[in-house]
Amino acid sequence: MFETAAAVSRRCFLSQGSRLAAFYAFASTIPLPALSQKLANDSRIAQTPLVDAGFASVRSIGEGIYATISDTTKGYTTLCNGGFLVGKDAALLIEGFGSPQGAAFQMDAMRKVTQVPAAGALDTHYHYDHSMGNSFYGANGIPVWGHAEVPRRIFDSYVSLQGMDREKALATLQKKVQDAATEAQKQHAQSDLNAFTNVFDMAGKTALTLPNRPLDPAKLPLNVDLGQLAVVIEFYPGHSGTDLVLRVPDRKVVFSGDLIFNGAYPACFDEKATISGWRATLKTFSTWDKNTIFVPGHGQICGQEGVQHLIDVFDDIAEQGEKLYKAGVPVSEAADRYVIPEKFKNLAIWAWGLTIGSAVTKLYAEWGGNH
Image (cartoon, rainbow, N blue to C red; front, side, top):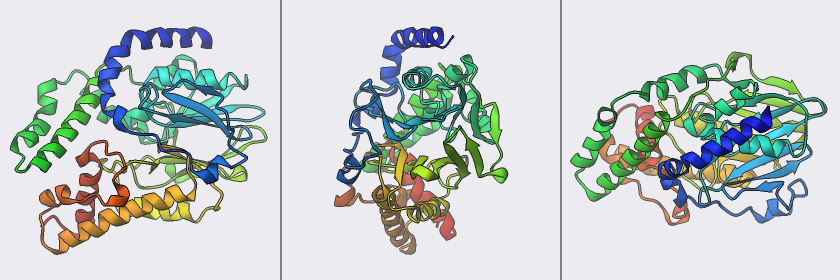
C-alpha cells in the first residue's frame, strides 16, 4: 500500500511542479547554513546522508534518530525540517511538511532503514509548511499527532481560505503597498503581500488533513516508548501557541520545530505568538546539556550556539524596539525602522511584517501600548 501511495504522490508532484515552483519562488533565496565545525566532528552525526534529493537530505544523528533537513535553494517539496525516530517496536515520523510529496519522501527514507510500523506522524505545530502534507500519512493509515488546538487552527487559518475570493482576501495587504509612505515601507508591505499570496494559493489547491490524535498540553509531557528508544513530547510557548518539542533525552537530541530558526529571522506573525514566552523558552533550551543536538524548524542542525544566536537576535530586536518605544515612535513606524546590524546581515527574511515587524509590534503590546 505504501509503495502505491508513494508512486501516486510522485506522479502528482510532477504534474504540480510548475505550480509549486511558483508558490515557493521566495524560498529559493534562503541559504542553508553550513554545519558548524563542532557538529561536523560529532560522532553521532553520519558523514554521509542516508538519502539526498537536493531539496532535502536525511541523515542519522544518533542511533535510531534521523533528521530531514530542507534546502530550499534546491527545491521546495519539504520546505521545513523534520525527521523520524526508529525503535525496536515502532517508529515516529516528525512533520507533515509543505506537501504530500515531502511526507512521501520522508516515509521512503524511513523504509530504507526499518519496516517497523509507524506509530504516528507528529506536526510540531499547525503552520502550512509543517502540515499541508498530512494527507499522505492519512492515506497510508498513519495517525497524525499534534497539539490539541492544531485541527482548529488549520481549519480557521487555511480551510477558510478555500473558495474565498482572491482579490477580497488580498485587498488589505494590497492597500498597504499602495499607501506606503516610504520606499522601505513599500518593500516591506510587498514582501508581506507576496508571502500571503503564496499561502492563499497553496491553501486553495491542497487537500488538508487534520491531526486525528490531539495531544492536550495540560497532559504533557508525554513519554513515548518506541522500544529501546524513549521519547518525550513537550509543549513550549513562543512561535504559534501550538508548539511541541520532541526530545530524546538519552541521546541528547531535540526536534524543536519553529521554536528555533537557524540562519533566518524568526517568524513572529501568529496571533498566539508571544515574544516574552519565546525568549523564556530559548532560555530553557540554553540550560540543557551543552552537547545537545537541535533540529530546528528551518536551517541547519545546530548545537547550543544556534540557541544563543536566536537569543541574540531577539535581544537586538527588543533593544532597538525599546529605544523607539521610549522615544514615542508609533508602532506603525517602529515596525519598519528596525536596522539589521552587520552581524545579522546574512540572515534570511521571509517577509518583513511576518518576522521583524510582527516581533516589534508584539513587543510594543507587551510594553503596554502602541502610542
